[in-house]
Image (cartoon, rainbow, N blue to C red; front, side, top):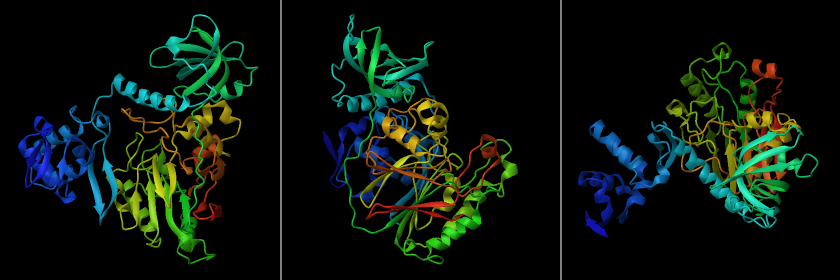
Length: 495
């Protein structure tokens, strides 16, 4: 049932059970600029940030605003998918385009149920993908496994992985109702896949066994294959860089300014720079403060606000017709939990040609879908997954990116990154990217995997004491350029 409200505007009558007439009037005024004809719960959920912005500009008691925030952000009458998201408290808008959203996490106690919802969302999504694998014949849910041995296939989340005394791999696989042991013999071909299995990921297993144990003959991952041969007639260049670390004593400022001059066509004008339309900077824009012990001794700028101000001065030197797309990293002033957004300390970065995004995120440009991730979880898998370690991932980061695509997840194991458990797993790769770009490990690399272009970006910071201690050799001052028309990639060296 709908009610006619304010000059013909239709209001869903169920809103009267949630909001007072005064609150409904405020909602209507907050959404007036959108010229809506009908307002219901879904419309409010989608536009709650605009409503909050409108309220904050009025002379209204803070207690009323806080109560109203709770209603549209946390009240169980509203869509439950928003329950565990982080509430936006402040946002900046320039001209007609929303540039950035700053927010702080909801002050809500995290419970076991939050993690249950989070992992259930992952399991249900990836299970449906794996169910489409024809190789998983005789597919059955774990609780329906027979007492006697037979050929079976199951889909489950890896609860535990360990090595037996005989050097075989023993997995515990579970679904929503039951669990089963899976043994992978070290002498079988499937063992090569099992060494890349990690806890908390979702896999399919084919084998012979019963409700007590399955002897695996094959393992299947929900890997991504891009079957879309995308073409673009726009002849543009897109640049990918990261890890500038402004404020660090090791910031290679002269090299970065040489890059800026090249972008502006002031040096080595070979035509590539003129075609640049976007520059993506994937996190660790500044070095931050208090990121690790004794960092203060290694900073040339010790105030994070001043670090961002200085970075803004540098970026403003880049010609204004290029869009600068910025993501936060673990050194930036951002909420620690992924998905990350910048905090208000990064406000100096908001000017005419910048766009500040969450980390991770998808971004579409010239028809190409880009998966952008700073990559805090990369260290975990580089150090703990035997199948990756053998490829020396700090020298060849492509193997880390391949790993994520095979799992359809940016951090499948609990503890591999900081995240906020919500009813949706935001680290799932739920779209098929054309390009997958990461940063964080300061090493440039380019590859093509399953028809997806993989890019690991370089850095603008010289080797640190910590990197010397762990034997990590960075690869600074490399600029990766992707051409939208011919899909070729060039790497320029500004060292």
